[in-house]
Length: 229
Image 1 (tube, rainbow, N blue to C red):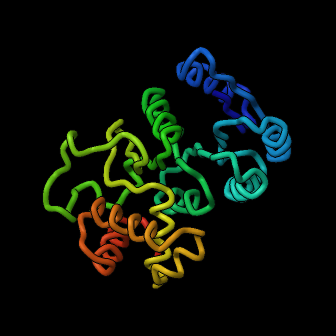
Image 2 (spheres, one colour):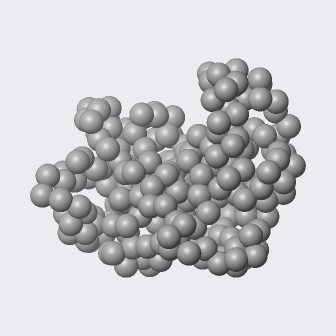
């Protein structure tokens, strides 16, 4: 496993190396201090499994760096770390292409859980960033049991359990649904068959505990998964 840490603080990089080493003996950690260094390294090491970006790089806008890295090396997933736990910052990062948002206040155990979720294909968000409707499970009227939770391809929460979740592709389909796109338009835009789109919608309905497009749209807005069109 190969990871690229982008952080301009030597002590932070050293701490992350120690934590990341717990992912396994074969874990290799590369380091960069700037966006340009990260782009060069990502294009040199095409087998990087994850870029771990500090949004607080000195003198630059972290979200701009995230967008530049996402555009410059689209085949490398990027997770961000930040001192901010504001919902707006979390959503901005996810909308800019991040596959995870890990607060710097997280324990090493939570960070490792977040990374394992991301490696499994999921999207990780901190619990504090999720709307109350998610935490209280008011869509179903019942608290979610551990038996009903999945540990991959889910939007995670910072308690090593995982709440309501959708794959990144399903989030994209849901976003287009909210914009009023038809199944045919979604299929054409994402280079999918209409049958595949219908399968994604069925999974979305099941996950959100709804039965049609309108209910899915309402639920998604209540959960903060998508913005108003």
